[in-house]
Length: 405
Image (tube, rainbow, N blue to C red; front, side, top):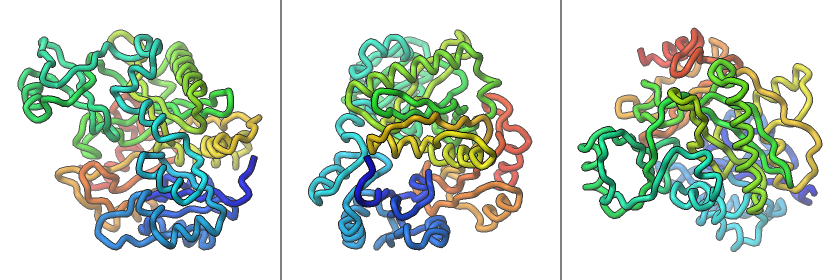
């Protein structure tokens, strides 16, 4: 069922919302940034940009409380979509009498939180998670073997810590003695991402992308995701691996269906390089960050004659409760990579984006300054990796253009 009025996507970063073009039935509200202004020039009637009154960017909650935005939403019927529902966003929408298309914030929290996730997974936990336990940090004992420690919350790997010595553990215990943590066995190997859509009683799974993680100089954090590559997946995964990932995604999706979820979710997976086994690393109970570019690649394939829906289109249809009788368009090539703010890289020269665009890449720049936030995103219609942690010629070209070598 289509809403009587447009869907209004409200987001801090406009890049999250451009999984499909803005139009009369799909309006976008976002922070004013140089990239946002470039999108508004293309779609002036359907994009609204809001200026921050401080140096800090406006969050989604701030945008929803902005008087200009409140009037816009009210005048257009009050159907709101956000990147991720939260306990702050949900009450604002309810208070204004609007309709929020995203699933409940409490359900998303239960699924994403590394601690409550174990209970939510139930019988799937022992099947798919690395060996794990929940412990108060001060009670964790060093056994001589490296392990992974995770807090309930983290973002792009920031809540994941490799403990490789007794000294590492002692440092964490001194800082956070009473904090509950998830302790997991340490596994090494390539990581992958699957974007999927819960649509009614079925799960629609997109093609698996290789997750580019922890590579310097793009980040100085070992577990931070910095991009995706759809082309190298076939090199790193066997047919049996892909079947295992599909089965895992469908079983997680079935549990989401049983809990009343709808729309997008994401699954992060790692292949243990020793045992060759597929492990579940993370569930994103929201729109995964790679969906907008994945949908762009699907649009490009459609221009070449491919039939089906983009992942973002399926997300919107699922949220609206519309029947979906088309498959997702396959994605077999393409990649993106992000230079994040690090201790030594805090800005990007103005001419970098231009040189990359001249070389044939799509480029998005961000006015961020907080450590680990995005500085510049580079997108390619072709893959940039030739193996796990190893760039091909295009990947090396991007590194050179970013002037980090």
